[in-house]
Image (cartoon, rainbow, N blue to C red):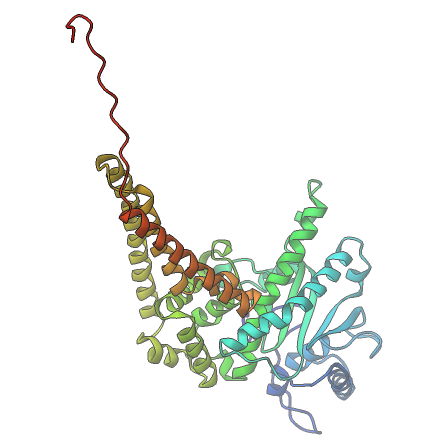
Length: 415
């Protein structure tokens, strides 16, 4: 989720008038998407800019400073209580109080390790879908609880739903370590072990979602990434929920609708065409035009209508499968030679073929890497072949009828 051009964290961002590009200062647009190859060069630039500003500047530059500096770099300032670590191409910061807290410290360590473990696989998937790895660092800040994002109405997402993370501008990501609010955490009934497990899983899952935003925004760059005519919200959040691996059932409200639109595009023409669509949208800086060219749909309204129609027809296919199952049951009782298991195997074979061709392996295993996707697709095809062979053999084989026992003789009638 990334509300662009508005404050997201009261302590971190307050957009102000553009910086003047005098005295060697960079223009404001640079700090929306700064490109530094490593942590030392990024921190050095932050120190120089903080000294040049003579305080705590606002706007994108202030955001850059707060995502880079700690109290060891410069005394005072909003960064005096921050710590920093490099994780691959991430510059990660968090409050010192969090690292010292017995409750949050283990969650922070496990979340950092989980993100480092998943980073290469997720970025490889995004590259396959036309979203290359950003040049330079990505800036990640952990905050204690979800209150830090939602206090005072900031950090709210579509339809005023509470969100679990935020991408600001192009490459600044903020993730809470606790999916619960402070009031919820103060509850005497809180299961700390369960909370810690859920907190780690939520932080890693949220990072995958936000990383999609980072890849898309940095590839497009300012100011085009914020153009909602060319990059409507269904595209922005739809690809993030799909490529980030968000389970459809876990989404709510508009997020589920956005992902449903993307799932329709994937099922209609397959993952390869969808990857070409995303790649063209980013490269040409126009998702609406790419949608028209690849799918023949003119805008979000046409897409919603097509996705709803597709969902309706998919529901009818499910009804047909159910009716086919009932027909197999009925025929097995009415016709002695109709093989019930053969009919059921044929239906299941069609179902596995549908899954293999509709992008289901990519949806299920995409965040685990291309090999997992390929193996899942092969297993679906093999299952369909095995069931088809079983169904064919069942239909061809003569069915043995059980002998009818002779009727008992009536002793009164004799023989």
